[in-house]
Amino acid sequence: MTDRIRSEEELDEILSRPGPALIEFIRNLSGPLVILGAGGKMGFTLAALAQRAAAAANSPVEIVAVSRFSDASTRRKFKEHGVRTQSVDLLERDSLRELPDAENVIHLAGLKFGTSENPAPTWAVNTIVPAHVTERYPSARIVALSTGNVYPFMPIHSGGATEVEPLNPPGEYARAAVARERVFTDASKKNGTPVSIIRLNYAVELRYGVLVDIARKVWAGEPVDVSNGWFNCIWQGDACDMILRALPLAASPPTVWNLTGSASLSVRELTSQFSELLERPAKFIGQESDTALLGNPAKLFVEFGSPPTPLEAVIRWTAEWVKSGGRSLNKPTHFEVRDGRY
Image 1 (cartoon, rainbow, N blue to C red):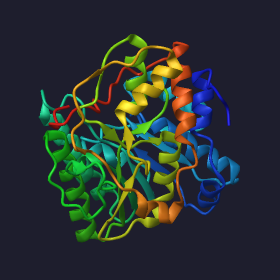
Image 2: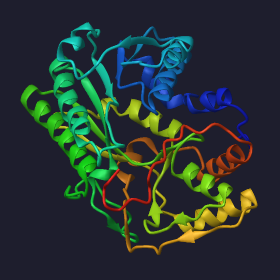
Image 3: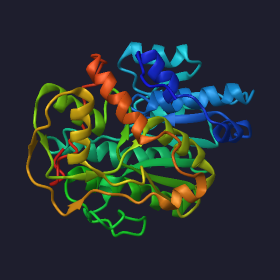
Image 4: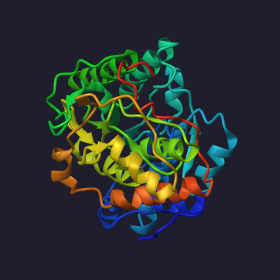
């Protein structure tokens, strides 16, 4: 495993490098595979990963990435990697008729940041879009991405929330995410649509994520808030692999799965680790609470095994990336927020 990732091209190659299990899965997948909301942070990794797996399997399955694609360079990047793109506004019901028929759909569409100041778009995207999608694809297998924010804060030594934990989260965004799950569940029960709901929290790569947020604060000499002192995370490439392979887990009523790393990570300890790697002093504000947003992914790991990318490698890559001036998406996770106001 490499000690350092030196460019965005190398980063994208590693993130979208398919493993044997995914290649074998794609080999027997009927296409096209439609990825909705592909213009977000995870969309390119997931689409490129699926396309490379199909190529490795000598499969003719077509990967179709769907987004508004307001940025032409983003759309061009998909095309350069062999992924078909289609520009559609999923809030416009009639526009979904333009999409190809499909037996397999990945739903990534969602809205989080800016919710506290302007909650209406978040509720619209997280509820109206799923209604349109399940109407357009009533018989398709759908993997619907949700979030670990639907859970309440858990005691830090609890091992994290399991999928049966009652959903009573704080904040507009988290409640809208619960509503998104309810819309998928209602449609699944009414139409028999097979759905797999994936509650992901804190996928990370080198341009964004909790590890980047902490490392960049250390590098800039800024204090790190430890009030929300623990979290889980998973390498984005591993998360996308499991999201794709979750299609056979879809059922009616929906199945629900947590997707994150199994370790509960200390913000304070990681800050100190980045301090050593970056040779900058660690500074802290706040005091750890005895609860945090933590998920337990054990059920999904029984199906797929543990994520193969070691956290130690990701931490080292992140430190080197920040130290060398690697690009940031400038989209902080706000991991320190405890009141649900994003």
